[in-house]
Amino acid sequence: EAGVAQSPRYKIIEKRQSVAFWCNPISGHATLYWYQQILGQGPKLLIQFQNNGVVDDSQLPKDRFSAERLKGVDSTLKIQPAKLEDSAVYLCASSLDRGNEAFFGQGTRLTVV
Amino acid sequence: AQSVTQPDIHITVSEGASLELRCNYSYGATPYLFWYVQSPGQGLQLLLKYFSGDTLVQGIKGFEAEFKRSQSSFNLRKPSVHWSDAAEYFCAVGASGNEKLTFGTGTRLTIIP
Image (cartoon, rainbow over all chains, first blue to last red):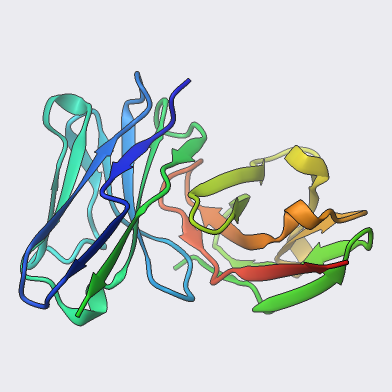
């Protein structure tokens, strides 16, 4: 069974630029999560989708971050404009349904300079 | 608000020795508790979880954890570590299954020969 795929693996951008990350969850998984993991900290949930609807985006900085999950499969997370403090690993995870075990991708490491 | 404390930032253990990683949580109701492992450049992998029932939980890779409500703890143990156990370990608490997970800051485990 293929795991959660994320791209790119690494990205370096200058502050005030925009960036997008892509996530392809495990086939058939209805629930998709985006987490932000800053160096030295644990992952922090940014947004949770159930199919193509948002379940929880309470910790998403909506002035600069946006996410969508069109057709309830792939998802993109965008940052516009990026700040230095956005430097982190962005992890995507998916689960069969709400309450089931979440499987994580390898993450995208973002460096903002 | 729920929170997780992992008091040990870094632990060094000799190969073959026993291991205990500490985790304390704060949550108003019965918590859902998890331990994840993250190897360098990899996503998070679930080691074990506690939802209810037996307070001693067995996980993968020979790990176990014990839920102690009176101490608000969920410590991870392994009787004999292997060099491949070197990684970052995260404790997490959830409001409902895998949702709204709050992670600790992690404990980095180093194994010496």
